[in-house]
Length: 250
Image (cartoon, rainbow, N blue to C red):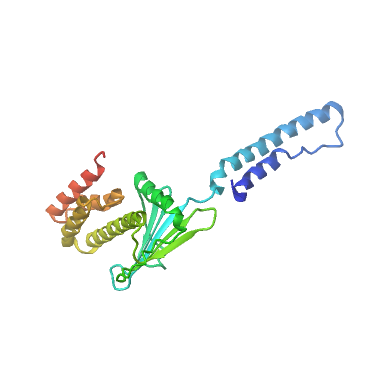
């Protein structure tokens, strides 16, 4: 456990061991009764606070390990992407390094586990993965591993032939494709009702290719389309079918 995590334990220990003040003016039975009452009150007060501090231990725990992928490729769409996944599956996606309001969503446990398993096999990016081959510029990519309680490691590359690196890259490309489809659907829902049908078709194509991840993040927008009669009937039917398929037991 880290030094920070020990703080509440030490505080609770100090509180529980705090001596009870003595009243020098009291004598005999009265003094004993008074000390007994004070001792009881102090134990209840300090004991309760100690229980609170011990219950708060998770708040001082080290942060979750994270794997971050970024890609900079001026001229492409998007020209920049950054994806951060922590071990619980909590994920952030941004298309601007200065964006302080990234898209946030939850990967399924098996999706997050696959990403961290690949990171483990790549030794948390402590060795190069660049192929060294003379190939066209495909965008500068970065893998970074942050353990949460120690030094982070990262590796940059344009093109890799390492099987684990290629598989991990594909995971992040899938996440990027998914978020692009989500952004397109949200834009159509808000500003282009006639374009919702096409946005849904593009989502279905990605899903049919088994490249859609964290599918549940689409449900609020799909439900919004289904319930709003101002959208095309065929778009509402398509949204309903897609939502039912996502909700169906896997």
